[in-house]
Length: 92
Image (cartoon, rainbow, N blue to C red):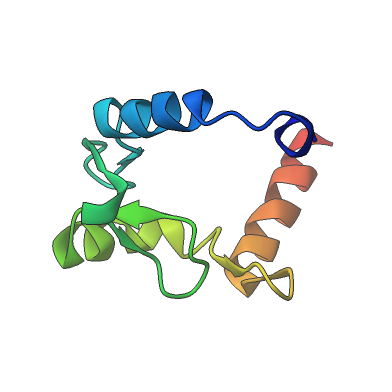
């Protein structure tokens, strides 16, 4: 909104400097190491969970498969639905 009204490049330069100083980071879903996002792999199914590599992704699969879904459709795996139903029954 304001960038259309005020023609100033001083904030753009500051933003570029911040991007260099503070790279985007993410956490591996398995080993919990914090790394730059560009070095992490993403789950091919949901595109949400991030991993250091294939070993971490395979190690996290038993936990992740329960909550993995396809974001575009909103579909959740049958394992996740069963787990949610069990949790509801336990709470009641």
